[in-house]
Amino acid sequence: MGNENMHLLKTDRPVGVIGYGAYVPRYRLPAEETARVWAAKGGLPVKEKAVPGLDEDVITMSIEASRNALARAGIDPCELRAVWIGSESHPYAVKPSGTVVAEAIGASRHISAADFQFACKAGTEAIVSAMGMVGSGMGRYALAIGMDTAQGRPGDQLEYTAGAGGAAYILGPGEEALAVIEAAYSYVSDTPDFWRRQYQKYPEHGQRFTGEPAYFKHIDEAGRYILEASGLSAADFRYAVFHQPNAKFPQKAGKDLGFSDEQIKPGLLVPVIGNTYAGAAIIGLTAVLDIAQPGDRVLVVSFGSGAGSDAFILRVTDLIDERRAKAPSTQAYIARRTQIDYATYARYRGKLDLG
Image (cartoon, rainbow, N blue to C red; front, side, top):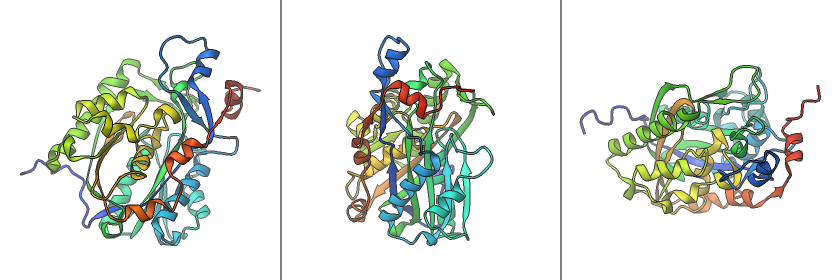
């Protein structure tokens, strides 16, 4: 293939997922309730979204997802060499989330801990870094997390979809993996489609830039490159997971790359939990791993505003069946549902200025 695959991210030894775990808060705000409050008309982008409770934030949810990942991996947390958390909504502006999570799950203090920030692809950015650590031999296991409690300005279109939740992945040697990472690739550009400056509570979005040249351009470039460089097509995959800010974008992106609705829908969670931002693509992957069979190939393409995409090709191994039964499924978290009204949501999310 000459230099056609020169931009693929390669490791010195095979690397894969040895454990994974999801977490979704139980509280749900129906989109119809938000539309009722703001007298909105027209189609709604999702059915409902997950809302964190008063005692939940990125740190507490990351701990839950990490414990699920550790249960599936079956390793001592002291064997981890890194705990890296990608998020748009770390609880502290100056204080790491990673150190709190590492201590809470019982990891060693001889460890790398860091917080990642690249909008909605912060979680997959952490996975790429974990691949590098494990693949280079610097450490045997590394924990990568994508988790968010995102917010939208009251009445803004983002408020309908800005949900909460995410996933944790423990990467390790390929021979121990329930899913081996066969290829990875990253594509970025300076595209001003979505941002939040310091001291701003709510993000701004570039309206027409959010689809093109942001989301679709980067998803397509990353997805198309990794497929061509790997000599594969959509027909070689059982499932595909794309970043899901709403239900329409990932379905269109998948169709443009040749994937069918049947390949995409198992990982399409946004209609019932909203856009989990840094966790959106990788929590979709957890739902796929919950049902995948040995030999299945999965394409995952994330997207982060600002802008960039990470793409991965995974092949499920024979270890999947015994591992996934050791922690709650993603659908179990989705089914654990308590509906709330807009007033409760506003109180839980601190939208009332009592100043």
